[in-house]
Image (cartoon, rainbow, N blue to C red):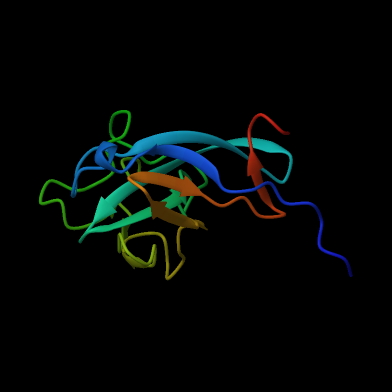
Length: 128
């Protein structure tokens, strides 16, 4: 089956906009023809991104805009039911997410910029 057209990597932000264990950068994507928020943050030096959807109940997880980490800045925590995720893998560690995982969005960094990589299922919001 031929690969559907996939958009090229999309500039998300400057690398400096993702401070270590700091506030996330939120962005919009289209997943399966529906608009969805996503977020990127830096953890242990690595930029990671996920759809802003808890594996327990598909609701946005941030406490306030861009705030996803727990008080100790060790885990991603859903503000609704307290599901706890590993920031580097998105794997549920405890809580009602029941061994689920966050939907990862691939990122790359080059020349001081962070880019996210669309797939057949997750596209730039402006393309629909």
